[in-house]
Image (cartoon, rainbow, N blue to C red; front, side, top):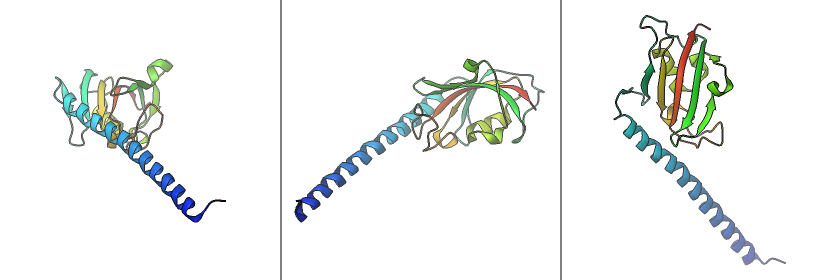
Length: 161
C-alpha cells in the first residue's frame, strides 16, 4: 500500500523527469536553430550568394535564357531538386528518382515559393532556406530537425508544365 507521502514523492520524481526531458528536447532544438543561424551567416559571405529580405539565400548554378518565362504563384512547373541538411545529409531527391516533379510555387514551402517566382525556365539555383521559410518547428521526416535551415539544389525545368 502506498502512503500519501509516497504518492507525492513519486509525482515529484515524475515531474522532475518530465522537466528534464523537456529541457533536453528544447536544448536540441535550440542547437539546431543556432547551428542554422551560423550557417546562414557564413553562407552569405560566399562568392555569388544573394540574400533576400526574407532571409532566403541563393546562388545561381546555371542560368536559363534571360528572356525565359518565370512562374506566377499558381503556375505549374516541372522541377528537379535535391534537399539536404546543413550537415550534408540528403533527405529527398527527384534526381535519384530519375524524374522531375510537377507542382506550382504555392504548393510548396515558402522558400521555394519565393525562389521559383524569381527563377527563369532553365535556371538551376542552390537555395539556403531559413527554418521559418522551410518547415519551421514541424518536421516531415526524421532527418529534418525542427527549426532546421535546409539546402536545396532547384532546377526549373519547364514553366507551365
